[in-house]
Amino acid sequence: MNPIQLLLVDDNPVDAALAQQMLESLAKDLPVTTLWVSNAEQALGEVQHGQYDLMLLDYQMPGASGLDVLTAIHQLPANQQPAVIMLTASGSEKVAVEAMRRGARDYLRKDELDVAPLTRAIMTALSQKRLQDQVNRYIAQTRAELRMAHQLQHALLPQRFPVFPPGTEPAQSALRFEARYVSTTELGGDFYDVFPVGDRAAGVFICDVMGHGVRAALVTAMVRGLVEELRPAARDPGLFLTGINRGLFDILRTVEEPLFATAFYLVADAGRGELRYANAGHPAPLGFAGEVAPLPTEAGPALGLFADGAYRTTTQPAAHRVVLFTDGLFEVVGPHEEEFGQDRLLAAARRHAALPAAALLDQLLQEARQFSAAGEFADDVCLLAVEVHP
Amino acid sequence: VNDTPILDAEGLQRLGDAPFVCKMIDTFLDYVPGKVAEVRAAFEAGDLAAAGRAAHPIKSSARYLGAPSLRDLAAQIEQLAGEQKRDAVAVLLPDFEATYQRVATALQAKRAELTSLPAGPPPAGP
Image (cartoon, rainbow over all chains, first blue to last red; front, side):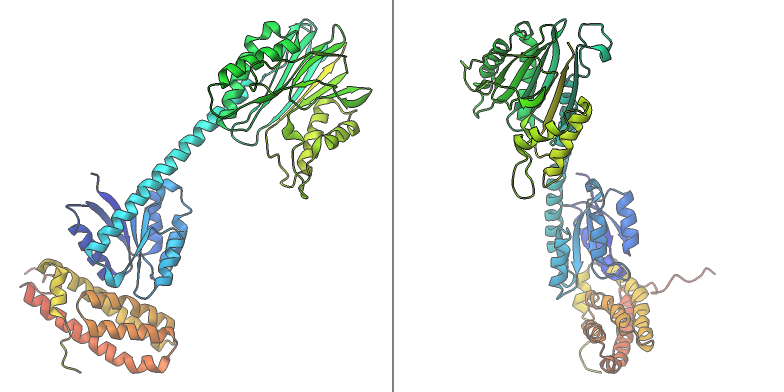
């Protein structure tokens, strides 16, 4: 067992000598290496540069008091903070309470200082500290893993959009895209993909997995796998969503809690001048054709809920622009508990219909954000514009 | 001056073996006189709060070395000074200083008894 590294902070050399003697007498059961300093400044210097497990801290010292030292210690990184046992004078229970409130693990009254209570306080403080250190390490590790997963999840999104027909300059493409992705937690459940289904036709997929966090992110990755796998059926939106639903249902049926995802799949076909799409419980995208209006859809059930979920394809003449989004965009809540809602979103889209796609998306995000009481989105938001240039 | 012994001999023995008791006596005699002088100086300068703060560490030091009367006087001075009771401190101060002197003398005697070496630094060479 490595000796416990202990810093003794006491301006009184008589008290310090006695405490050191007691600590030495513990050596057989509780080996302790003690360094004694006599003021707060030295104590903080030692704590910042050494690795101390434990501090025995006198409350009343000339200059900065023990409470000041405690406060300063708790501003240090967690792995530099020793467990502190406060040494108080008799009759100063209030000081002891204040010390505990500021993070001391325990306190000992100087007039009762003896080997047995000292041993007990040291053991208790150390076991608390070890537990705290474990929790801190676990939290740090989990955060690091979530950050990594967050990066991976971003890597699942298209890094650049295809051009139509292939080889065209992006500015001349028959289909052009803009996307915004706002994730509020470390991991989200929103996902979109854009891929060619013909020389002048793109498949545009957007989905929102219920909830967020690790579960939602894993389901998102599954959906992405299914989208890849079912590309051969991607020219027919109804068939495509029916296939994804079937695949997702098979995966999720073994999970105890119900999990599902809403999705909208659109084939923007500049060659035929039409939109073909199918909807799995997702908010209807906005079509920009003359006036701005939600695309008329026939919504089937959300993905992953029913084995036999079937989705029908709707065909419409091509709007020059379609904006797809997830519900995080309009489910923001204002200061009076009311939702931004799809009506306000539609009104904003109409007001700014003349803006270029990128500016329009930023404007919609900004208006929803300003509406919310928190000034920020509560859920992930995914926003995607498709422009058709026949 | 009362009849109770100025030092509680058992208290000293409880501290530990002879070398440690000697070390504690040396530490006490090195540290406490400065604090006693500090109490007086702060009092003369009219800074009762500082006098109280100087008296504070004498309490535990005196207790550990088995000097209850010095401990009690230091505690009273700390409290009265904290309450800004100048006259009461003035009354106690001479007794406090005299008691310290008796404690110091008794500790020096105890130290001499515990070891053949003198209490001070070793004499210079021939």
